[in-house]
Image 1 (tube, helix red, strand yellow):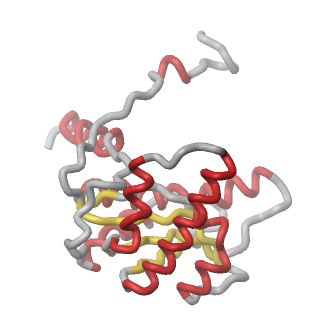
Image 2 (tube, rainbow, N blue to C red):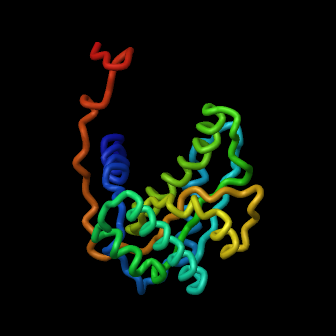
Length: 207
């Protein structure tokens, strides 16, 4: 494969990793070996000072999925009510069938987050979120749809109770609901261009 083809494949995956909330095959089981392959990719992500403190909890048991889905719906509806914004059709589709999703992957961190300064917090989450993003990309490359969700991070203890997780030394960050795509259109989104969001040498600098 030429270098240019390699670049094109990587760029395509990176620029078309969209959130998939509706066009999911809820009936097709994802083999655990496939999810482990994706996690193997995720753990190649860069780490900070904390090292390899990531842990992944895959939930495919119906009862546990149903309990998680109920909490997710409660958190989302409460948030929308507080912000006085309507429920989007895509989010409605997700919460209506979240309990049926083939699997949920919780990306967790061993070790309490620092509270002393911003730099330490950036380093802490900067050691886990790249792995979560790499996991999402690995899933995308295998036609497995997901969406980046952080709402459950505000309900740590309840989720920990469901998943039998320790509550004093493990933090849940991102949860990825995963299922094979079913007619989902994965394409580039409308975004501001690089020129519009990039400064040179100083804030606002153009040279």
